Image 1: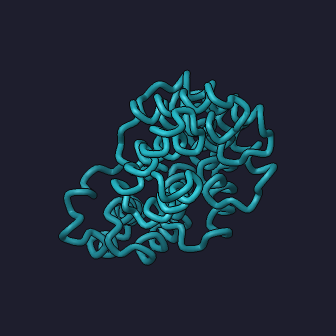
Image 2: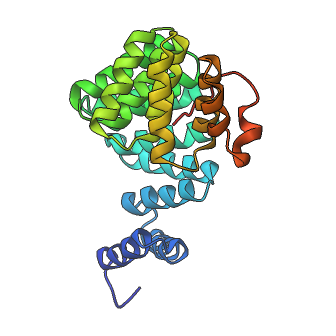
Length: 251
């Protein structure tokens, strides 16, 4: 690239990347690496593209390469964790997230991602700890409160899950999946009227929300409100509502 500096090339690549022109961005990042094989930004951003297109194997390779260049950057370890989790390597992902959080104790995303990986492993107590650490730093995160609610629900802490889901909804009133999952824990606690209200709000927010329609119809039926249950069972969603179970919506 005789006519531009590396920094100018990276700036152009980032413009392409942010605009979704991934092929153009990748080509420039690779040109940068051809000149500077250990250029940290180019390695890190190539890993980001690899994750975006589902090539977690390549993303892991780029993350490990950039960590070898500079192991002190928390973002690099967090990116490695995301890519490892994408391949189902949860133990390695957990180690990467812990390293990221160790380097930057107030790293909300790393704590949240750690909680997700721990929850996926079924280690609900530890997941709850990770989410609470994230919330210590950023208590107004609707996503983290929602994830905490899911982990609490999985751990059988129903009332605590209700609080977490309600907090997520308070922070993000149009959070349809949080309304749906709030309905689920309320329904499981026998609080059907409240569950119906939560499901109804979810489908009001997302009229095409088949999962919530099914849950609403089933809960109305359980409450003896047959006519309303029938109305809730729209033709397009009838197949979804045959089983009398709660369907959860996850991350």
